[in-house]
Image (cartoon, rainbow, N blue to C red; front, side, top):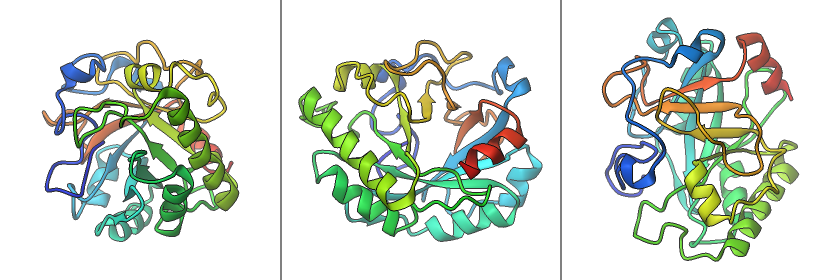
Length: 249
């Protein structure tokens, strides 16, 4: 995923830094990995995708979507509401995500901003848990935002605690194995959170420390048209029925 406070595509790693620099494992795929056969397909979008053809996405195989709501403690995506409501109207299970800038403000403040601007949750079977996107810094060369590992772990914990206090759900955590292990020191404190793994490859590879399985896997940025869905290409580890059950909590 990526920054949005300057004009740029919202992709996990392609705009601010190259895939090679992030070492998240390979190039964008021409189609879904072979392991997609028993998974549920979905995608994630932000203001870079603007007005998404949601019925078309569903017809192309999408069953869920994550939509960017906020960044830091001030930014709100101007396309969030139409994307979030549009995906649901098309029959997709959808959720909201927050792009973290942990050097800008506290985890508590950013969680409060997120929940107040779309990052809520309801056990209706159509709303995915709020998601935290925490990854390489797209605004500079300080990969870990200048935070020591202990402070980064504390920041993530405070964000998680506030989201759970306000919504009743632990947030999904989106990250790469390399960033997580480098910037949290391989923290194993968040293994109860569903993992949204970012790795553009034919296989998920090694997971960040603390997790034994991924719940979502972003396997491609779709830059070559692979996957056929707007934005980044994702899989859920299970059937559509299991996705609905996961959404209900």
